[in-house]
Image (cartoon, rainbow, N blue to C red; front, top):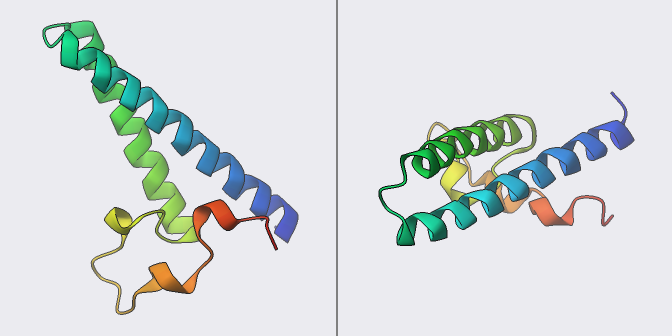
Length: 91
């Protein structure tokens, strides 16, 4: 896979994570005022699983996206050794 395709795939996955995160924030705000809405809770759980999977995929392919996704088996602080997720393509 060439560098351009890799960068494009990385940007797409990062965008997907941002969309899922926005969706979750919106659902959390709704659930704050409608705590007994079972459908909304199911949507939240569904999108939360999707986000967790996307973050896991990103971490495996490109490194940690935030300090919460750092591998506990790592022997170095790789977070500081790579471009930040938002810096991809700025080279």
